[in-house]
Length: 374
Image (cartoon, rainbow, N blue to C red; front, side):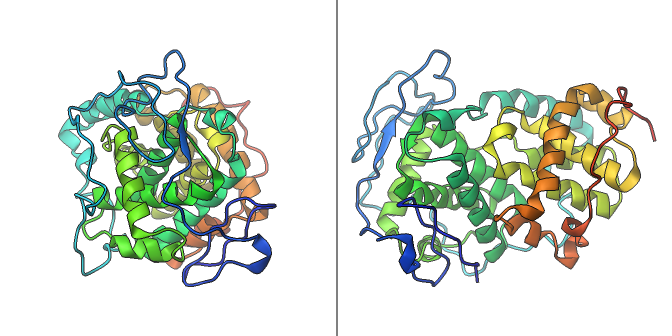
């Protein structure tokens, strides 16, 4: 059962756990409304690429500001009286990630690795969220996003979702919030719709819509969740195939193999980057993956960035260092943070308890400027 999530201070949004009632001291939970209380951001110069699907949104409390940015050919409005067109009737949850993610992953086809990597590097620029979108959000904060992402990690563990599903959900969430202003009472609805959509895209047997309604303790109705899913698709212009830090990290691990402990530690520190929009949204996923590889490789093997990966990615160690330093800070800080879902996840034996490993207090980055070969 998903652990209880503490409420925000004041009248801010509350994320209830599975099967639990909202704590009485968290304020009064208003009845669910059919309006989303979501508003379109004013367009800025250069923002048209990042918010392509804003055409024709005739939703309650959503106001259209630009009708020239839809890239998709789907020029129609979905019927909100119907269920999701992507609904999958599943009788089992997704398969656990006990087996290696290599082998069946298309991005790891050796013969085309360089071409695939180049395509992903170009695509990550097209589908990145705005680095500082939270500054334009009038009613939500960085802390609320952190709590939401921590909750999404717990949801992923509850339903045994793939790591890629979590990364996609956070990408969908950040791209949506880059274009739309959301009231705090609807933030969890956006996050739930994001992981619902990511599950349908990534999982073989995604959880049913009713289960996603259940994990919010029925804070939102099935109809509200499906309508938010449709809005999410429109804002994202149905662009769901996006590169993630997880995809790049798997490529690097395949290109330059490491021991299982290093691999799990790299996945752990990469996932920590999801919690903080600032500073990590200013870095591309390929660079965050490189920093995660470097940090884990140094902690376990006392090496940073091998020449094979420097040649494959084009990243020198000096280019990785700023992101590596931020990731190291996040690693040092995580034991003291209230959001512990990722740390608890990687305490499991299947991950070799890597979240219990003590990180070095200081990284010798000043003495290392060139990639090392090992």
